[in-house]
Amino acid sequence: MPTDDSHSDYSYQDEFTSYQPTHPTGRSDATPSRWPVHPQWDPEHDGPFPAPPHQRGGEKRKARWRPKCSVKVRERLHRVMTQKLWLAGRDRVGPLCEKFGVLGNTGNLYNLVVDQSPRCDCPDWLNGYVCKHLLFVFIKVLGVSPKLPWYFQKALLSTEVENIFSTAPEAPVVPTSALVRSIYADVKSQSKASGDLASRRKPIGEEDDCPICYDKLLSEPAQDLMFCDKVCGNSWHAECHHKYAKHLNLQGKNMICVYCRSDLKMPVSRVAGTRITGDGRINLAAAVGIPYMYSGPYVPPHNNFLLHSVSLSGLS
Image 1: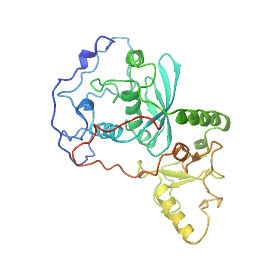
Image 2: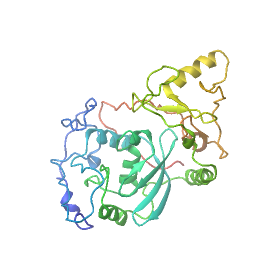
Image 3: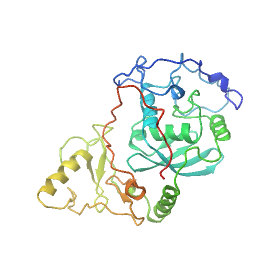
């Protein structure tokens, strides 16, 4: 079981590895497909991490031990190094639990919990991946070394969580502007008063169809869904929503729910510059001055990495 003085059990060899840009692969156990991550942050290891020895009667890990950092985690680590993310809030709610608010590069606000089961409410994590927001919190905020195997695990032991918190800096290592923090505090106070918008969504079954394209709603787990937050709570594909909205716009009509015909104009939060997206997500892009950014599928660069100039500093 690793303790404060046992980091050497998971040490890397201090050697530089050449990087060859490659095309992505869908297999998490594929042969070393390298992403252009700066050597300081490279999780590649010359062999798998051995699982900590289990003591009879001791705590059991809630998920399978991951001996290696997968290709997909390396892809997301590259996003952490090349995309701007901001820490909006951090609350210690127990000796082994902290909650975080992270502002994504498109302005969406995500809520994370770090305890024995680290988790995020973003679509990527809900689809079963270790998302870039968790990697950002582990490595940039909590200061977990990429030479340790904790940041890509789906579950941690109590001693591992305690070790992470005990060695983490008291103040966030990523400077965040007072504007982001104040807006996050206002939004969080409103959320407690108004309740969670996403709770208005009706449960989605495996046999439910999109009312626009008539394909199964859950046929593609990674596909975003939107829903009627006004009246009925029914869902449909986000891509279909955009095509439907464009069609209505060309006819000079407002966007309405396909089911109940209620107006689906995006509501504006009482906090100036914030809005609620169609999937119930709080977006602060306009409030903090984040310009429009492409939010489609991730396309990594295939040239030499330019990470020395990457800055994850807060907004000025």
